[in-house]
Length: 397
Image (tube, rainbow, N blue to C red; front, side, top):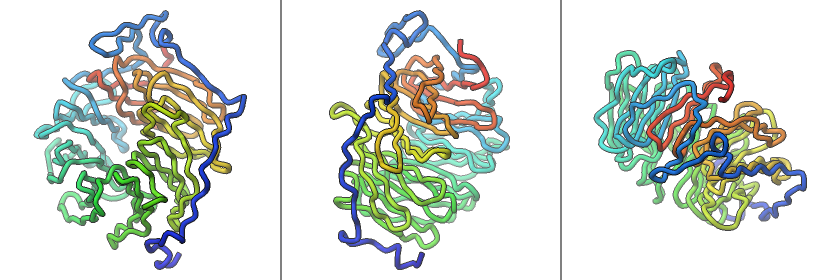
């Protein structure tokens, strides 16, 4: 595509699909979980507003944090370690096999909300709410670089180079070469930047903003290739984004429960769907993901709905019910993992929408999760101050 094709569009260059009326098929799978089913033999108690579950399906529990654990990531190279960050202003790098601490990432000024390994596990990045970002050598545990921005919203590594990205509450996002710190800044148009996704080509990044708009940026030139704004943008803050495998489609969710599908080639909005599946309450879509083996896109919302949406007709294919809000979803092949405010991790079949498995153990909401494909393990962090390891190979208790 020629460079001119990526310019900022006038309003008449866009054509938005009409709002879709959801048509629920009678055979749509709707699973309901009664509160008494959350514990063993229906036992569920309440203690200081936290769930107390009399069952633990995890193979390992990491307990070094003294407050809520907001973020977790695993090292993609050796697959031997986890990094976790929490409200206690600390991050730990620790061993997957036994939970022993390799090193402590200290010196943060506020809650550590972002933790990421570089693509080759050479570096670990940790970022706190105040905007202090630190990079550590995985081998030695020594801090090798740091930088202070405004309040931090997100943090991610390039998937093929030692390049770090961060988005901030003042609307700018940054790109640094690590460890020398060579920097490039991508300017704000006003609102904060809330989420981002680096495309597989490593040359473009999709960014969502607090005003509901979306931009596709060219990293080399620091120019945006399109800007979805105005009536074509979300009406509330963009919360999450994902891109399909052939880089043609961008899915974005918002605080008011709307899923938008945008063409990555020209920035035209192809669909707008009421994905929260309810009309009141907390509708925010917290996570969105494409499925690699089916023509569907997935949404998880605080309404407790996991929606499996057909990309062909943009209608609901399966609706998966949770007793509480969904905080994050991951899709691996035909498997969908959903993390929930009830502290339970669930596994769903993407084709049928059936719940195939549940892992209990957390006594408070799950806030983040990471999946190790080769080890078939899921790591979940929680408000209960722990990180747990769940294995697909191990039977639930």
